[in-house]
Image 1 (spheres, helix red, strand yellow):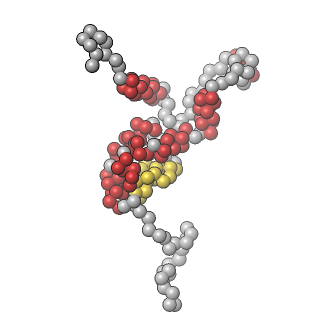
Image 2 (cartoon, one colour; image 1 turned 90 degrees about the horizontal axis):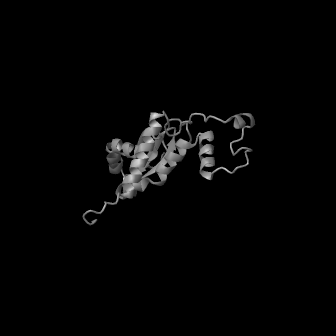
Length: 175
């Protein structure tokens, strides 16, 4: 508690969360979303003719973070990296209790697939899917994960390959 007349210290976590929210609102106002290519940068006349992005002669070093961002944008990996961060931080997003029984398995085309260790947990996670999608959207950004598919425990499959023919089954050995 500060003494009377002494200014109160701001909470650094609240300040960071507020700054992140401001940055997201500004990006949304510019029409940017995770995974989308940014608007092309305007180049100076020197850069337009030489294609260099460094200093006046192009030899100035660029920051590593800028180079990684450019690589992710050029390859179209932004959404995959954001989804990977969701998979890596799954326990902190959903909580330790849920993470003990459910784990993300795959992420393809905006669809996050989660496998649960029992059908009860799978049903519970399906009921919580709207809340989870909101939480994932806060963590990864809007539009990264578009659908959440929840699967229960898997039983062994007797099916061999993508195509099969109907028959008596694997246990009919008396022939």
